[in-house]
Length: 301
Length: 320
Image: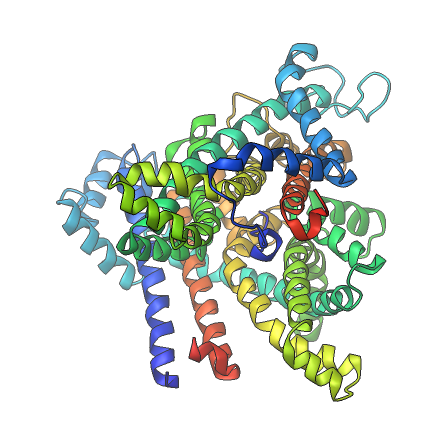
């Protein structure tokens, strides 16, 4: 499980002007982003992983249920070697990419929608905000992984369980990040002006508050998704993954149960590299995006 | 705010957090589909035991009454019975808890011991090569998957170099001083892997707060007074930057315990985490439930104690 990204890394996101110049601002952010070699490399790597997730399973056939060559080291015949039942590790990793990316995307999508909604509505309605901030603080201070394990075990392992469990315990982090920004925005003069114009609070939130916190949402999408990858892999590693489809965590779990985790190094190495590549590229993209948006680091636009 | 009022507030907060954990657990057990009796007993129970359990836990009563009964049982330390070992869950977990506390605490200490110099080094050479290196290290550290780093250490230091044992927490048949030494020796690799995954964010936070502190007025004044740069960095800036960084550690303690669960699984370390792994394979729900509650209680206790000590050391905490 990774630790929460400290706020300081995400800090310094300037409050965006409301909707008006959004497209121009987007273009200049992209110009500043392209100037960062590390950020671009991370974006390409992330793109590649998504490509493998989408197209990989069509190119590489699904791993068979067993094979004759057991625990073969990586070489000409099997690029990534074979596992304790003689299955091709390359095929497992490729098919696992689809599952891992899918779970991360679905879980973080749910967490983002719920977390943002709670944060923004909370910032807008003061008495609700008091409740929200206490619930978020309390949840974040608990050991979340053991709680996820309990729920996943009770509900029975499946992809749906995994997505819902990870989402259910990821939204407080999103709320924490978005809330502080939303509180600033709600206090600004143009939101007061909007309150004079209309009593339609949903309209004010949708038209003025949400666009202003969008940069923080973009960053927390990435942070939440990479956290979701680690949580889902952690659950699968403990045997709570979907037993019917391959995931990176399941490869590690099966290696561990077969007692081959350390001796057959390739069983650990390739899924570990895949997890690291996905999480690291996502983190670097979010840092580069932050720098590109920050006028102090982005340079003249 | 007086010390007493401050302490009362922090203690109240701790109690609130524990109540929250218990209530969330209760609601999850009742709202999730499935037989609630499973949460306190074996899937292979007979109809008679099931009925007995339902009465004992009051599962045939209305929800509010059930909740009060649940609280009453927990207050008496009754976490149910582990059906794989047929002993109270509390006894199973109390044997394991010290190992988890030892592992987590030693990883925390190591994180601070290594993290403080790294953070100071990076902040004092801002923008330089060392700073960049520390930042890359920090971001990579945040992206590590605990079992991956654990297996890497096992493979290199345990199997190839044979520097450290590859599993367990102590050597059988050792006594006295020998036993303590073997405990330390077994602790090295698990502690190192847990430290590695948590060091990154600590260093990054410390660096960022130090960089801010170094731009503050009191640092300018200290420079104008002719204090040496080293003294300013270690005595003045660091003392002020340590508080936010340490607060972050408190916030992350829950995540660190999650990391400990995975680490113990990899190293067959006999803590609560390894117990969770074994309970998952046997679907021993009472142990899973008890493990979460016990870890939550431990985290809350540790956080409350840290808060109190900090409030005593740092006058700014009480003021805010």
